[in-house]
Amino acid sequence: MLAFLLLNRDAAQPRQRLAFLLWPDSTEAQARTNLRHVLHNLRRALPELDRYLEITPRTASLATGNAAVARCRGVRAGSCERVTTSGRLLPTEATCSRATTTEWLLEHRDRLRELHLEALDRLATRLARRREYAQAIHYAERLVRHDPLREDAYRLLMQLHDGRGDRARALRAYHACAAALDRELGIVPSRATRELYETLLGCDDAQEPEPAHFGGALVGRAAERGAADRAVGATRNEDGVASCWSPGSPGSARRGLLEDLSSWCTQRGGR
Image 1 (tube, rainbow, N blue to C red):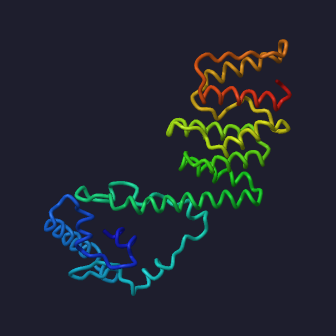
Image 2 (cartoon, helix red, strand yellow):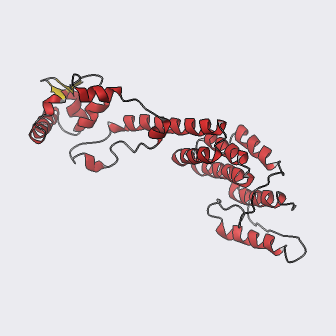
């Protein structure tokens, strides 16, 4: 109840509404009784409760005249960094009794989630403009982790890795995007994302450190990756020709694996 009043502090809330939201499965009379019981328990636990709440026979609200609420009203989002470290609103069901429901929280959680994603996007974009790639990648990766179907975040991540000179990671960001869209929606990346990928794939002047394995971020392809990696490694001791055989019907995962291998070889003078 206190959380609801805080989240809706701009207006007094009808006690009937509070009772319905907190006990939707009870009769109106029982819900009102439950609300009176909660208020009674609060007053016993918090003797100074009336300094912070205004309770009338019809409404309940935060006491707008006290300094604590004035400070609360004055709090703004602050820096983007503070917003991005926010936790989930009332994260566990333990915050409410078994007789209550948390359905009323969904709207507030969704709104805060959007603010969180917006802050991550703004931070990553701002840092990218200042060419602070490492920090920008940190926030872009968090954005993708929280919203794995957000294509513009993948494109930003691809551009950030490319700006840092890590073409292989830029390509892997595309494959992660393609895999997520295929798995969750059964679609391929948009034209803008594919064009960016093709542009990166066509560049062969990346001077990045050679990793121990290509495609380290590919998920669920360890056996195939290992076989291809061994085939490429064998060329150092033999005639310089690697042969990779990938049987089965075409698919985004197999294509991603082979494209990543091809790019990795090409960037190092192979074919």
